[in-house]
Image 1 (cartoon, one colour):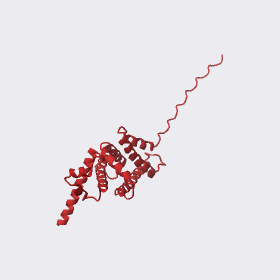
Image 2 (cartoon, helix red, strand yellow):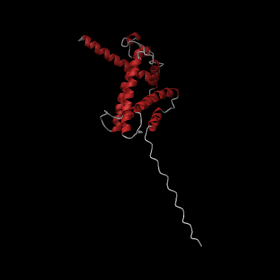
Image 3 (cartoon, helix red, strand yellow):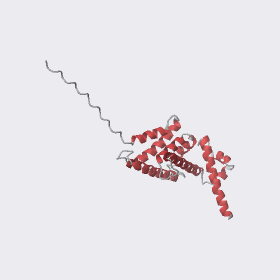
Image 4 (cartoon, one colour):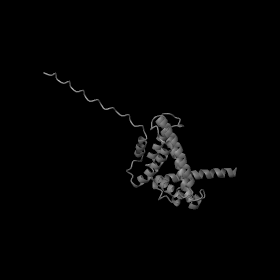
Length: 221
């Protein structure tokens, strides 16, 4: 029983660390959120904090996983609001995706963490590499399925390659985050909406009005 209780306390402390770190980084930024500051925020030494994680890099990767949990709840709320239903299952991922983009503009520290760590994690040996591989794979699959459903519903062009469009959508979102960190005047959500509009069916051409009939020629004298 003591061992089980100790394990449960360890899980609870780990969750407390991640939730607190998420708040600290959102407020102060990734560059200023040192391991020491995060440890102080939860009343631990640096060594005590890292007891719950194998490395500083793993800690930051787990902070991003925690951010994903928070974002998933945000997406579910957006889907329920947009659908008018209490059931978010099988909802509208694009609406949730847009809500997440808008929310990201309010937490620049977490955007900075994601952008930096995603670049570092291109190294296959980096502790965050598996997280990003899994995240991109899952995001592509979810986005492609939603785009495919909307294509079949007639919202997008009939020959839309949903898998390719999903990859492009995620790449656009990540690239916009980097540009937004450089220039916060960029409206990330508006650019995503513009991209999705490009996938839509073109409006039917409006036929040009027929020219007015020529007046009859006057009778010959």
